[in-house]
Length: 275
Image 1 (cartoon, helix red, strand yellow):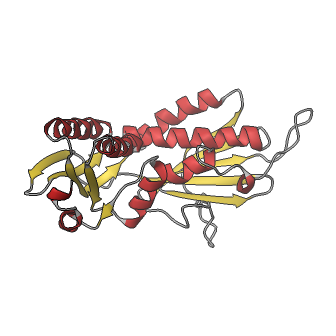
Image 2: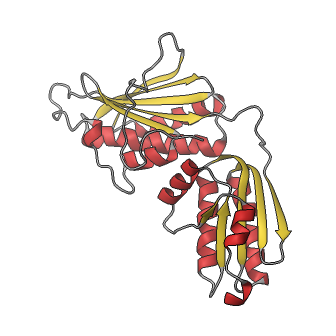
């Protein structure tokens, strides 16, 4: 999964990315206002699943679009339009603020690049859950487009978790989709380790993880929190790309220690006698 631009400020690329390509068939084209957000969520759920987005990432997209639509209602003109299309292995969803109020309704609000961008706000959630985000001004209003990569045909969809008992630590090697089912397995494996070792020394090897969703991310956060609760436990996360490291750091309320690979992590662990 890849991202673009900085991770602190949503920016549109210089080429005006996020535009609907000419001739691209729309999967969904629906207007919304404050009274139709629930209906929008239900419609999105049906269409993104049919487009091939896995259940967990489909939920991430629905949450993201709901937040953007809510921002358009609260901070924009009070209404907008959602368009969904698929292109080059990616699902794109565009939320446009109509930018002007109808006669008798409230006046237009702020453009999207002036919407709140703080922890928990719609743009913040969109930036870290989506694979790409663009924000641009339009006439009237503004447009936010998020992109969610569809699973590649050659990925390892079946999740597996292999435990390796190393001389100085335990290594959990994860591969495939880090989703809701995987989250349960990760949680059980970490719980078993904590039952065996009051001060666990754990390396999570994510080198072979090919897809993830917010629930999978939550499993990593929970694992780190559980280890932090021990008297002298330590956990390293290995094998992540720099983009994934930044995304995980942004979405997590607790800090992680990252290493390039499991071998590097093993060398960075403090000696067992230092626990």
